[in-house]
Image (cartoon, rainbow, N blue to C red; front, top):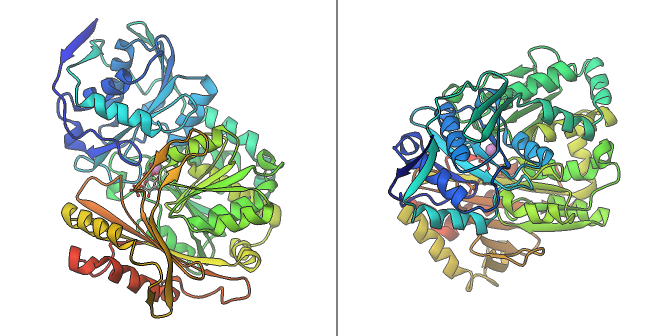
Length: 542
Ligand code: VG1
Ligand code: CO
């Protein structure tokens, strides 16, 4: 039976950079998840009888949430609800399956790189039929609906078994429990030369993939070890855990420290990679080198043709605004388009749909292509492996070659986590005012050329996204960017992005933090970070 349950709005259900993220106890309040899911469906039209894909990253509350989402979807008239076994399906696999099935959309239960467990974070994201995150027009409609909602509809069917492959009927919907890896693996086989990568491993090539106890474990075991012949044990932390083993499932030098330290040690394998909670991020390392995500995007774009899926070249490359300009240089040399979008994968959707861009990337360890409409961690690793299989030189030489051809964008991001909300707001407001007076000013050797609050005009649908971050640009191409995170759940997180370009003929082997020291110091001074937030140093440096 379908029950209609009276409810009251929660005032705080505004989706951020990537869906709604809150602490688990917030999501566990009666009606909280139900309201949000019903508000999503209330904001959509035409899904009666159609398919919905539901995935999750296995974090705490995932299993309960899957039942609630499926029962509300069935009660609202979806005809087919496709769920990954155990409630597990990575964000890129959900995107791939939505597209493959021609589904109406999908719901992803994840707070991505945020920590999990009973006191950790939970999250919900809605993806559209193209497979990508809902655009702002939809997330705004959902938020508006959450403030009005009076009731939700839910089936009173008993819980179904999410650990057994097969079909279950609920109301007029068929629930289908599928293997989360199968279709994704098939898609990867259409893009990459698996035989070539197999030959690489057969030649003695070694790798470590750290799944950080998050969703990519099953994918990595199936693809790298079983399909491609990486030695058993190449995938570590490959079993998804509800609390990710107590760590942040965030593939960066701070939270994937074991892998990072190993790769920079004498015991390093040839190649290392890690992915995040929901499998859309990637960190890439070679023996003796950490590849910044911005460089990785540029290198993948420059070498894309080695993979069959991209043998005809790329239409264009898009990057988020805070991502370094390294990929722009590749696009210019290849004579293809390049775009600068606001932070968040949803802004790439139109460019990909319109065929204007083939590769996209973010400095936050996100890389992907037009094969789906999400960033894709395993995909990035497979493309790196394809390049290494083709060129047969160490990863460190691939990177150095790249710098010698294009120059190097020294790049770092400094995060100040959990700072006071008011202090963060005041800091951004003051910077917003300073952009009018900064141009023309000099700070030591650094002269400000321009400053603005980034505004994006979508070339496909004409929509405008404003207030997307303060940019301070210097003569010679150096840059400082400031923005507040839209994915945190405690206080505010201030992100500083700092970049300096060194041409091919310059010094390409400097230490990043040292070579950027004057810009880093200036970035703190311009924003008055210590005075406003009390913080002397960032919490995370990537
Ligand atoms: C962060 C990253 C952004 C990314 C987003 C979602 O957002 O900076 O580039 O798209 O997370 O990634 P913010 O607003 O906190 O800076 V994921 O892998 O957490 O879905
Ligand atoms: Co993620």
